[in-house]
Image (cartoon, rainbow, N blue to C red; front, side, top):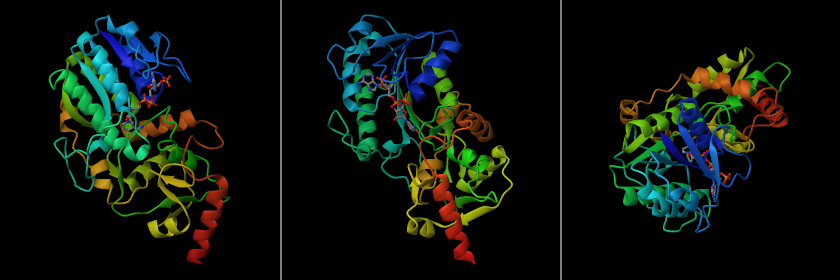
Length: 334
Ligand SMILES: NC(=O)c1ccc[n+]([C@@H]2O[C@H](COP(=O)([O-])OP(=O)(O)OC[C@H]3O[C@@H](n4cnc5c(N)ncnc54)[C@H](OP(=O)(O)O)[C@@H]3O)[C@@H](O)[C@H]2O)c1
């Protein structure tokens, strides 16, 4: 196949380009190359999608499929305007954040979406879901439902995840900050998580580019209670020390954030958001060839990737914060 990836230098796009190259496809990546170039073997078309001439170098060619990872509606609107006549198949990497309600257990691709963002650029991450709805709608309006696939991914992780959401737990269990090896964990009954390995998402996108699959697909994997995810991370790290369990109110009272970022316990979200984030059936994606690896493999590979870093990428508690909070939790129970 001749594949055009709009992106291809960062996490998802890069993994997709890498997978396609390994399968012998001809891969072109269009990106500015701000931090990195596409993987070795891909052709790099250097372009800025905010400029009118962004697609000039690729619009005259014929593509078996175009795969886009964009988040800004303006990027997608300009891309489909320039390139929809150059391909019969467009795959957009979207997100389950497009759904209006995450409280419904078992909701599927037919669930109600957020309102699309009218603007070409989202002002902040608060607009993320709305922006991705606008991206989806631009693709479907230009290509039609029979020539487009919307891959609504849940949390994506694996080696290369700079957010720290996949890396923190195996890293922390492998590197306790306390003398007795204690590790602080959130206990929030009803909190679930799900994580698809970026390599499995990438392989599925390339597979779908080959089969011509169309329509909206929720692409999540390894849905489980957060406690099970943490147990797998602990097993991968070989942690045998004490596990210090603290509840949501205690954590909130000690200024610990949910989900990711500094002074957070990554992956912890309130039970109200858990069902829709981690209970979506993936019947369509599996029928279209999705075959995710077990979580234990992803977490082992992420731990190897985080290697000997003093802190994992992106998220979690620093060693100092971990020690401070573990001692505060001990005082609570003494
Ligand atoms: N991470 C998650 O857990 C998660 C979950 C669900 C869905 N998603 C979806 O996954 C996708 C993320 O994909 P990713 O990791 O490959 O992308 P990314 O980190 O968002 O990078 C965007 C890509 O587009 C390029 N780009 C950005 N601005 C550009 C511009 N003005 N002109 C040309 N190229 C530009 C970037 O390269 P240059 O900077 O070099 O130009 C890069 O290759 C998004 O669609 C997101 O919604 C992520």
